[in-house]
Image (cartoon, rainbow, N blue to C red; front, side):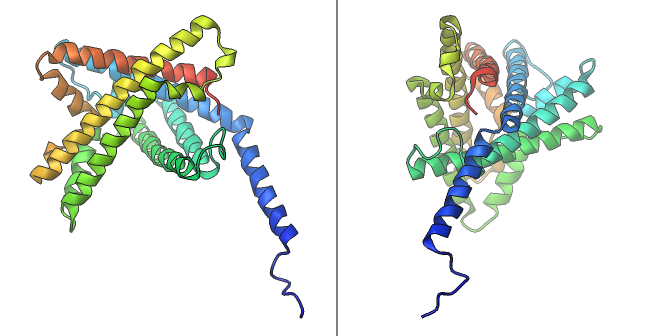
Length: 290
């Protein structure tokens, strides 16, 4: 019987698989990808430092800007040479998005060492984060060109209203809210167990730098996880009440904390955590394995 020429021989299949694996490794180890990742981490760090500054202003008596990524962009726009810095931030956001999408496509450092389920969860998370930062890049470009943008709370409430209008929309919004709460809990767990350290090239750090990196990582990831969990809780409440305006983005979440009992002190603690996450992003810029 003649063999069908279109069916690869086993050796050909193995060769194709080996070539694909080699291409993935080459992509992960690319100097260009590394430079892109580090530029994106720098943009993320600057953004969270500005958010922390706005949050501190809210805690101490109020601030006009939204305490979220869009508020940070608008704050930069109001500064001297703000447009030039915004252009740099837009490039950084684009770099961060491209890096996360590359991780979604071929995996990050150590890909293949984790279980298949864990690796695919990490890839899906990287894909979603890429879209978030692509949106921030687009918003930054709009501000540079003189157009207005909406806060994350406004965007979230609009999206929530659309979802609630769908069949089984309330169940879907509750599911998303639960997923966000779980995501926040995972981030807090990472902070408490210090699993974030596996992404750092700690062998390149001095002893003092290692202590700073650990402290900033715990504080930053812990605060980020708490805020993310609160966003999920408010989303669940919005679905339960069938009221999209009950959902809150980062800005309204922080303002809600400020109005809670001992809210000023609580918000200042969260602010320190957000600032720590910004500084930790710069640690990752220098020492992250990419």
